Image 1 (cartoon, one colour):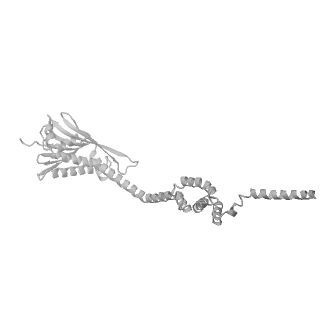
Image 2 (cartoon, helix red, strand yellow):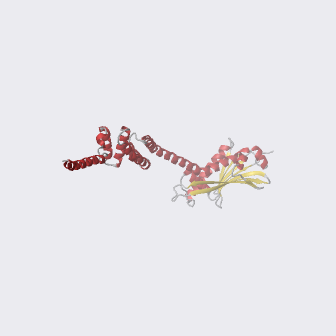
Image 3 (cartoon, rainbow, N blue to C red):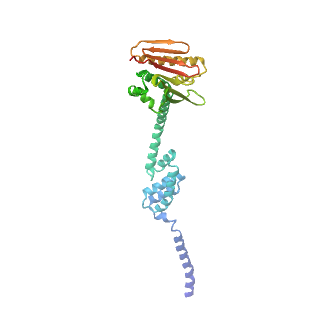
Length: 326
């Protein structure tokens, strides 16, 4: 009898042990049965998300809404490095930032992405304005550079016409005509000999309409002439047809120095502009104009201003002062 019972009990015991073992093995798979329904539903959306981006969004929603959820640690282990990589790689571009905010409007880097997008949109507005301002500024500088040669010729003509110490030693010019003296000593400083004080200025501007682009470098030589140590004249020389470059700069159009019509126009414009300065400086004194094929001379009181094209190719403005009687 006991043997029968014993024989019957062994298969029952084996079955029980097998059921217990299967329950232990299946513990992870039946875990959702013990999780709250909302927790599991959120986790399921994360696990079944059809795309990488949607999984990021679902993962963030789970971590945000289920801080004590059964699957919190599992989701966080995947989400944290995935979100950091997405932010670092895609989230630093406008498209990536938009995608980030669409997937995770309040995600770990949402504030930074929103700031990035605002800055990007603002830059889209400001960049063209900044570029336009820079272009306008460049054009202004180009205009100034082109006109600088002519401005310098006019300025030095005016300065020469203000000199009152004609026929006096150079030292007296330093004492009386300080504006001229100071201008001669400004950088680049004039170099003086027994015959003259000479100052050379260089002007560079872009040649208008040149293709390929090129710059024009034009020197201007200001020479205060001395005879036996006294001041007798000032010569302002634009070498090698410099009046043509004066016209080119002031008009902002290319000038062909070998074009006879353009060269004549340049000479005539220079003569007219310098004569206007000479007459304006006369302060009511009577002025006479004398002109021949080579030069125009304007005599106003004790000042004589000559504008000429030198046969060697230099263009010259020369102001000669007659000393006041003792």
